[in-house]
Amino acid sequence: MQDVVGKNALSSHFVERLVELLNEVKASEKIKVLILSGTKEIFCSGADLDTLIRLCKKEILPVDIVLSKMLLDIQIPVIAAMEGHAIGGGLALGLCADVAVLAEESRYGCSFMNMGFSPGMGITKLMEHYMSPAIAQEMQYTGNFYLGKSFIGKTNFNYILPKAEVLEKANVLAEAMAEKPRKALSVLKRYQSMARRKMFEETYSIETMMHELTFNEEEILKSIQENYVKY
Image (cartoon, rainbow, N blue to C red):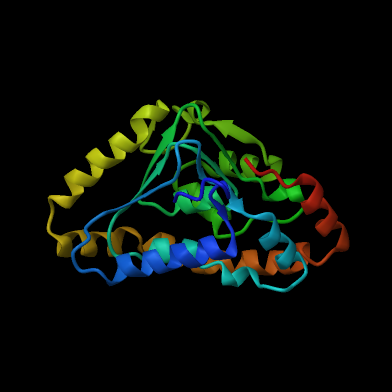
């Protein structure tokens, strides 16, 4: 993901292009592993301000955001190389991966509540794959951002490394996986992701209902405009 000017925010154009690329990966019979990475500074900064305002005004629906489901449904292993900051929906994307590599120096946060509405993109439960429910709920309620190094020894992220080593580690892991037969990788991925895919379907429905409630107030629009943070 390389929208440097847009800070890798999930704008409508960004999402459309990413969906196209993920569909290409899904259609390929040759690709064995997918590495999802961003810029050195920003992995993904979540929904852009325009998208949030349109959601608040009911011009688009939360269910239109399909990236989380697409990543969970991809039939090959996905590695998230989060060397840059990952915030809100951007963090959700990384949490959809089967293997996640974080940077000690970068910041990660669940920022939805800072703008006055409940979390989305399945993140309310996706977080619990990599961390305890207690830590996940703290991050959701507070909206605080955390340095990657603060997760060391407290979470289940595969690796938390100096930023300069994140992408290299992801490539090493991908090479080890790519040595295996694609059919075996696909069968194992289908089984290993089963629980998370089922959980996502249930959680996404509940999150959509919560959005219907929390996006339905005029003060939320003002809160979004005042508190939106773009890295």
